[in-house]
Image (tube, rainbow, N blue to C red; front, side, top):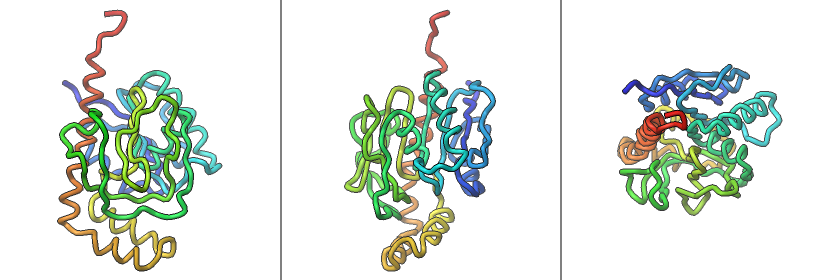
Length: 234
């Protein structure tokens, strides 16, 4: 079967590492849009949508955020499968009527998350698994009708509503990105926390976190399965 065609909405202000990571991990034909600079698809002729991370907050009034929310909202109404990662997770929750708030602190570095139930997004992934996290905002109230599918003692780490999936953690990160993101938090997190995070960016922890990359394979398989669904005209 042909690879699914996915609109990659890159919300990172400097999207270079984001581009590298998602292109490496997603087995699909990706059409990238620089969402943080106001670039959005002109149509909805895509098999799926992926919204990336960003240093922005979904409640900011930056001029590109409202149009992004509007486009994503219409994609959801058209029942196009969507996956959001970190900021993307929060944006999807916000668009669907959930609530996102500042936690007042960062969850940063390799941490453990548990998935709940039998979501197809976590097929083949252990019940408790290692991930890299980098966020100070969190989904504090899920959208009406949404199902929590992952969590830890800090925040919700995953939800599903219909064809929409979100994960708070970063399954796409390599060690180069993890280290750069952590270094970028100097002054925003306590020095002792930051040094512990940097010390924890090891090949061993990265290898453990690679299990979480399965969410990308699972999402693209979900997208392929949706393409095979009979329509009313069949």
